[in-house]
Image 1: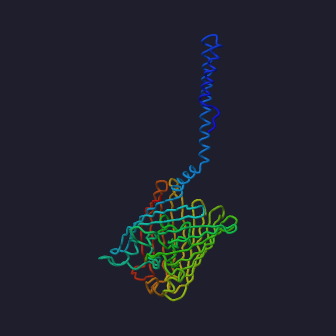
Image 2: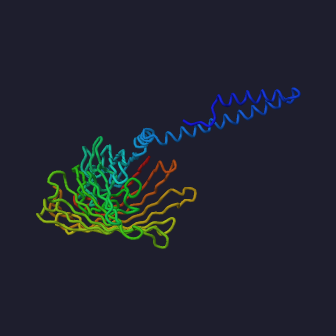
Image 3: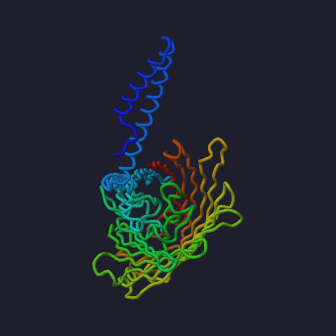
Length: 441
């Protein structure tokens, strides 16, 4: 390395200046002043020498490929992985059916990983461990307890009804979703695509206020439509999917998405095709979302009737004010096998109702399910003959937020009239209360 000053140069300079000054000094005081001045010069030169050395070391490391490579490897190891953890527990009980009342306790833990592989390629893995214990499974006779009834209409097709937090695949530790997401530029538009094993219901008919069973409405009617024949159900089957989407418009507020789902194996025969058009924007300065989707089902319908069935729906939500959000969702199908012809729901959420608790929330929703008079067997269950052609669900909840949002405790109740269309039910009203604990990290 090049240095403007060396230790020996500084030493000789000090000695020379000190000798010269000694010859000229007339008394001790003048000599002492001269020595002090020389010491200050030496200190300044030494500081300059140290600064120049540090600058050369930094410049050398910046030029070194080995140094930059080691620094990048450290970032890749830790900074390219996102991890989050969720814990959910639900206690749910019926009331007014003595001696047939039931109480169910269930819970699950989710561990989600997101891997940033390159700027345009990501990977994801979601693991879940759960206890099972869905309340729907307790409606029938259990030991010495008399029967309550059959399934509710919201749980007829997938086994997940009054407790939307119940797992589609009960078990110790299972893979809920896993796959990759990639994007490439076509002209001025990014085309996104994903190949995965996972859940179709997380990708279509989403809603801002009725789409999360962990923090919002618990009844699955308000979370996942019963009129849509979701392949993820209580059978626990694996579902393989190819999902693609593009964002359009000057502000990229339009999204067109489409997907193909099937069980692993003969993938391109007798599966399900989904397509959705989504818009997000603001009306009167408040966030609004609109999603319109359709589907063609060959997986369930061909097994039951030998034909295909089509259907679709609309999901809309709007934050009316700082405190109030509203939603509407309607879905229908033309199936001869699915016992649910149509479902619709409407509701609202109220934030910051209590001034001292700005993060708490109240939710109120009403759902309607229209049932066929008769249907073929669906997913190996049935055929169904219903005494009533409708089921109506009312749900109200209060969510209390603690620990800066890291602990949510929700209390609520559901009132269900003509549950299951009267199929296997003696009572025409079901009343349920619940407490849910949710911890995100």
